[in-house]
Image (cartoon, rainbow, N blue to C red; front, side, top):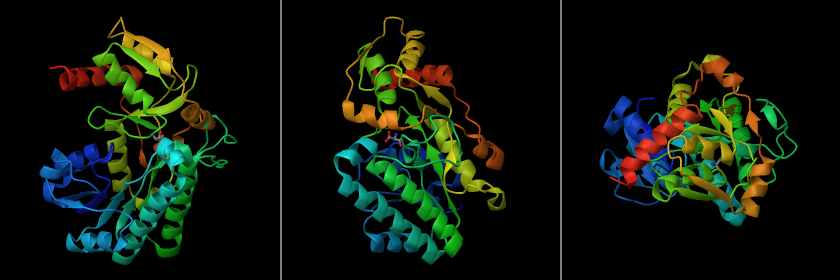
Length: 316
Ligand code: AKB
């Protein structure tokens, strides 16, 4: 990666990935794009362009104008929003993806897009979910993610595009809030713990899902993109995870730092049903073997860092 165009750059992943890559590859070499301009440091610290990813012509023009050699395509609706607006999700998630893949083919670019634990469904083995297994998701987001994995494989086999991807778990971060995801509770809980000392979880006790702290997610994207192509067998859908946790486990972890923190439950049936259709804990051994994936943060280390960073952000 020398010159990279990032779509959805103001989202939860993009806002941290862009800043990290600008530090590594040089500010001018990371072209951030998004449908809106929020005036944040992603916009002001390097090249920024407005881009609606359903506009393939503009995406093509921007890739040519900035002479990029890589596209990191992040723009997408997350699971809960996609369930509310399935047709919009199809058009944005699949339309944006096929535009980005076509441009990667036409301009011979390296390509990354994230998949998700949402690509699994109720008939997938729930524990130690294998890298290669049954994928019959029951959500529009899941349908989009499986299709995206297959489409990215297709562009590699058919057109030799250097496509790569990760199946992300819930990502926990303090810079930018996620929006419209099922795993968002695991971010909200930290914000509310710092601001109010209390959280009402929309996901029920005893519901396990995989999670990862954002610094590990950002590093895993960069490491996969830098990995030797000849070593990659599962190019577009590596299972990656740092922990499998339930709301009460995060609550107990927070109580070690904020002893008075209280957790109650007000379950949202839609997001609970999505969560129950996803694995409890996935097996990340293919990512470890093929390109050396390793997460630095476990639950305790993440909680300590999140609370420290949020106290600075929200209180001081
Ligand atoms: C969501 O909850 O929709 C995302 C995901 C796991 O893909 N965070």
